[in-house]
Image 1 (cartoon, rainbow, N blue to C red):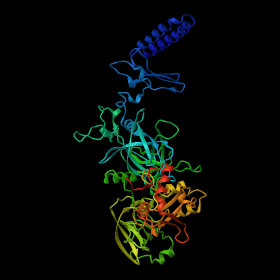
Image 2 (image 1 turned 90 degrees about the horizontal axis):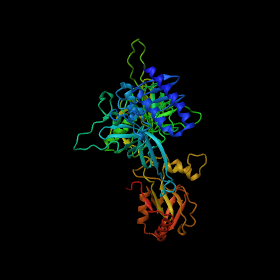
Image 3 (image 1 turned 60 degrees about the horizontal axis):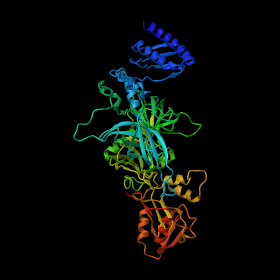
Image 4 (image 1 turned 120 degrees about the vertical axis):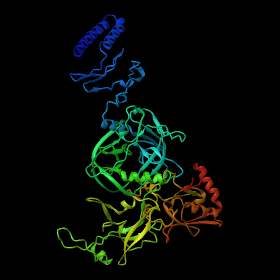
Length: 636
């Protein structure tokens, strides 16, 4: 019956089409009448939803009433149905709502099975992030560079003790003056606030009050947050429901994973699939820290940063964050593993929303893979035997392995406990190999720092050491390691001090980057500063004070070409940091100011008139529109 009705309808359409063309030729005034008859006959011919495919043409989702809405696929052309705007009571469609999305059909979620429902809710929880970056100029620290914009990805998670947040990469929102998020399939953007940033692990948490309003203490927490499909209730308004992605276990090699995000090449959500290639320690480009990372063969392109990587159960096993920018390397992407994510979230929870960092032993080590080296340390085989094997094989002597301590950083928890030439044999009972690696999973080994970085500030580690032929256990309090040359300023402006036109700043990795320290060609002064990048921090608060440039003034004539010099002393007093230098200059009462630069023997020397300093500094700041002559890193 229905097939015959369609045939009749198509014949009527052809007849009306010929009639319409003839009317165009003869009397255009009757066109409106012809169109009215055509659409009326089409609309009242049938009201039952139909799906007919013939000659690669599909007509479906017939809406009863006076208008015709259909999904048509012909010669590769596809357009979604308008069923989102279908109201069975009103039986009408608003002209302004054309171009709807079938995924918002009132009955769409009820028609899904659990797997399809889970996939849809997971995709809806992946957001697109828009950021406007106002990065400082590290060579002219009182100024900012031209604003830049970027897009990246993020996803909704439920942080215990904090609430719903959007997780993304730290570099996606670095120095972000404006950050917005956009849900899949929507045109509205929501303002976001960067709440916590972990540069070492390249993770950040965003608070979006318009999407996740703060809970009202006087009322019960609103329902509508779901992280398990078992809570599914078809009476819920799934379209407005917030789905927090659950965290899954650390994947195994060759596990299939999917990368969700908004990479370059399009505006809509993109899904790529791959497998886990390997899991080991890698250097995170954002801050240079070495942490556990997952390598996958799925494509991770610009814009994927911050997007979730999920397993077959739609559980998050990591966050996409970087790749290798070399033409000879393909299908290599890196993922922040779920273990690092959990550490970041727990750190933020423990410290009331503040991120403190990852712990280290704070020692420089030597591998003991050379036999002569081990014999020199008398690190041979001890008298203990392995138990006899089941098949009666002969007993073997236990190997004594480990790594030797060469230097203990003064600001670490190991200072005063471990010594030079100590051999670290085990940490919390985990044996350390001669190559500095420890067992991870069957057939996998990782660096010792992988385990230490999984602990938190204030925890203690039981370290088994070999010292002068004796084995002993020591307890070491763990602390986040601070560096003399920081890799970032936690999204704060770089510190600087201006004195008679001399611009001093604190040496940092961004400063070295701006000076091209890792390029093929650089000056001798920059080469010297680069050698300080791995120097240990002697005391908390110490900085490498650098003369970045000289702003010309009559008070500093003859010193215009002094640049990239390491300041060691001011008036014969060693300079610890910029704040210390500012205090020394402010408290100086002599007629001259003497600046001594590295090296200690034969370094540059600058002498200025103390009486002219204040006026010269004010003149230079006024000429270059500098609001203040001193900004410290710890300034509020």
